[in-house]
Length: 269
Image (cartoon, rainbow, N blue to C red; front, side):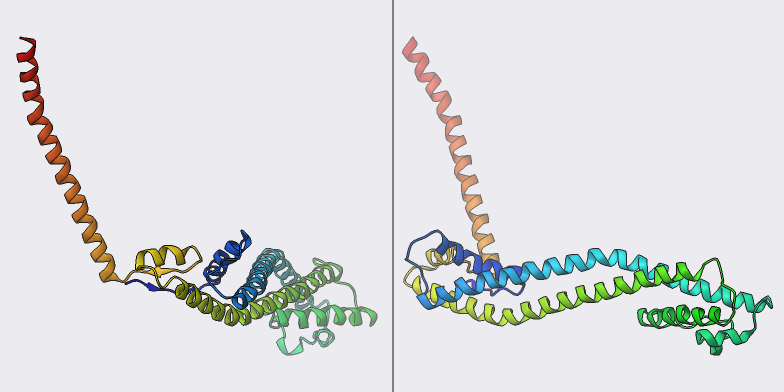
């Protein structure tokens, strides 16, 4: 006897609700579940479907925008790091004193770069470099070039805007994920309730007829391995019997044809 298998993915849950919902959508009043369950289905199915669609859209949008964001992150990191290196090179050449590092907050790193690997590091040090350079120039320092601070600022601000936008997308995706997770509890309980009532309605039928009726309303049955093996064996036996019948029929034809020709020749004679 096959056992019913409850859905364990969101797509399977949606299919399990879709079939009875669309059976109701066709019209009529004869349903194999209660009015209360029908009202719950009419509420839960659209709500769960929309939640899944919104979550999928949010994830897709986040992934699509992430390509642009990754590029902006890379360029901002490159411009900030190159600017610090230009500043360090000017000190190494004797064009500026090491004291200018105090404007940028990089005195502890000497000729090395501050940490720029994480997004948070880049947010902090990008701001320090831009504000520090402004203070240095206001105190009589000469501008650096290749890259200029203007290019550093443009790429840094693009990164900051993209970072904030990406965080908003992540928050939207997270809210959608939490909503779907909360709805799963409601949906799973409804599916069990639906399936119990549907099976109970068709309980007077034999197993095969019962499965045919209930599967129209989304119930999923799975055969155990022993049952599948037995079904395969029965199919083999049926195929063997069909082949045997066919062989017997062909043999009969071979025997009958000569006899028919002989009778025909006698009649013609």
